[in-house]
Length: 195
Ligand SMILES: Cc1cc2nc3c(=O)[nH]c(=O)nc-3n(C[C@H](O)[C@H](O)[C@H](O)COP(=O)(O)O)c2cc1C
Image 1: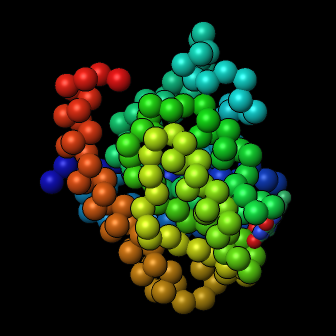
Image 2 (image 1 turned 135 degrees about the vertical axis):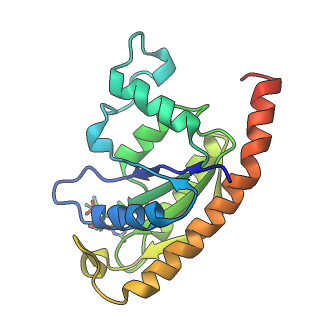
């Protein structure tokens, strides 16, 4: 079985951000899955501010931008871990998504959202629209973290880790199914008609 590459895209650059522990928890679980390679992409480590030029419009992209694009290009799907800010996704995540396009195209996205009472459900709805905008789609399963301030700390879930492992497991199984199913078709199509 060929390994799937499923990077994690993280949404917050906020000082003392709380949802980072959700992203690292997702990373730990994903790393344990057979035939899956992953890596966490943190917008703090990327020079994507408000969009000025998309990656392919930049005359000489920075090495970390080139590397980001290469990694997104070889990905078979993505896990997005993001908090909800004012009923939507953080600007940092939107900017990251806006900087490239082809690299998202026709690939499955899995969502993990965090918030207060709503568990980031409105950020999830908004992300589904944005992902459609880049010619990709979001798988139906979804992990929602309510009351993020209490539910997770640096070590992971503050209670019932097995319940969270089961939720993330279901999400990853579904993402892997779509990623594995679509991969050969996507590669064949790319070979037949580049771009
Ligand atoms: C600017 C801002 C807006 C927020 N808006 C919402 C919201 O609309 N819905 C919600 O459930 N939580 C909201 N929250 C609470 C966040 O979900 C919570 O602070 C979370 O920890 C933010 O993620 P972060 O700490 O990883 O940046 C908001 C927080 C901030 C900073």
